[in-house]
Image 1 (cartoon, rainbow, N blue to C red):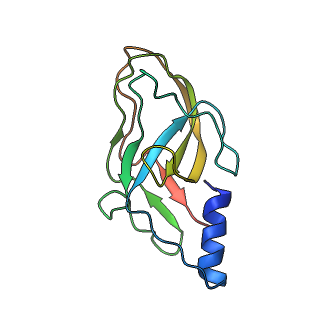
Image 2 (cartoon, rainbow, N blue to C red):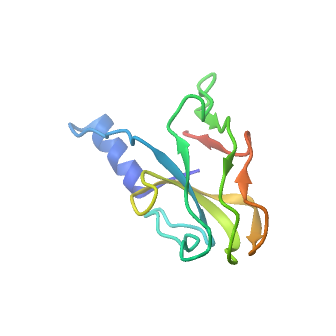
Length: 137
């Protein structure tokens, strides 16, 4: 898991300085066809007539497990399902968690263990419950 430069800066201001970090009211998961940088910049799947859109994934206790025993790991408790593709999305290699449904700030990014090509007419891609583990260490 990679915290983006934005999230790292906000947490540093919140913990070490006098600034505060306002928890996002909603977080969204998106898909990339390349590996995003620490700046959160990457090639997200295009929304232009492709059926693609980010999927809300919290924040909620029902969405993510609580870290246990100080390990800093939270796992998704629910399926996060995207819409069925109406155009080719390409080879999905990474995901990101954002503070907005469109635009906004990338908070966390990571490569998938196995990339997946998503084509027009495929079943709707999803992260099944238990597929994602975000670890703060």
